[in-house]
Image 1 (cartoon, rainbow, N blue to C red):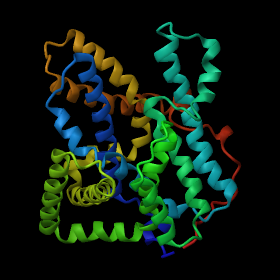
Image 2 (cartoon, rainbow, N blue to C red; image 1 turned 120 degrees about the vertical axis):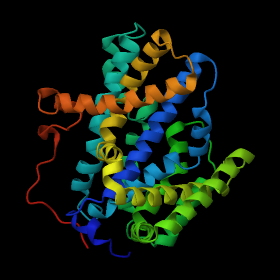
Image 3 (cartoon, rainbow, N blue to C red; image 1 turned 180 degrees about the vertical axis):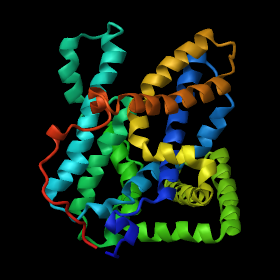
Image 4 (cartoon, helix red, strand yellow; image 1 turned 60 degrees about the vertical axis):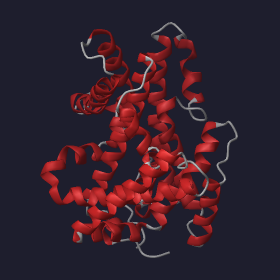
Length: 346
């Protein structure tokens, strides 16, 4: 396996463009959920729906690709450390926020009782609430990456690509998502060097990069409009093209940091937004549809998405120095005791 770029290996440098990419991803995800929720509640589509359709081929793939980008930092550590940092870590937030979702959506509405809470939390491990499946899948992908790290790149990526191309439909959501998304996480890890080179190229060739983005947008939009974007093989090609387009756009944004700094902040706090956005999304959607003079589903979708992104960030700022910080920070008591900081292999 090729050595990881220095910025990945040492952990000493934070890659701003990666934060921009993650920021775009989390905004895309929140916008999708907000739009579908508003349209369902209002019984009609808004103008944002076309943008959601455009993002569909690459919205989730680029999230997983960026999540795999820094696997090299931990992949060579011992199994206990990897399980603690990448499995138990996400399991803690999955159980916690599945419990919160159950309290808000079921107990508070009288559809369930507190007695059922422990079972609901444990059940989330195999059947997470709708918006939490991503942090359920990440630990699985880390385990696969760790277990296959000595295998040839072509073999691992080829097998993962075959799973995506097969469009496996078992009816079991987590199984189907595993098959459909694994390849992007592994591409982010195994091809991290090429991805970083792509970002550097974009920053050095701004005009050409912008032209490439325009060409990609035409191809992606055309495939969506023609209804072929979900076809086998085409879906994989479009997903990878879209993921690399996000990398290119993120690299260009990093050149104008002051202008796009709020998006970078979102990228640095992706997990915080992802965990809590459903609370602010549901509340703002109900309030806006009922009380707002604005009744255009597109505008309401944008407003709901804005609240759903900003709300968790404000909540985090409010609780981060209080006992309630456990909402977003795993307590030290639940972490494996660690000695000297281990350095990942070069």
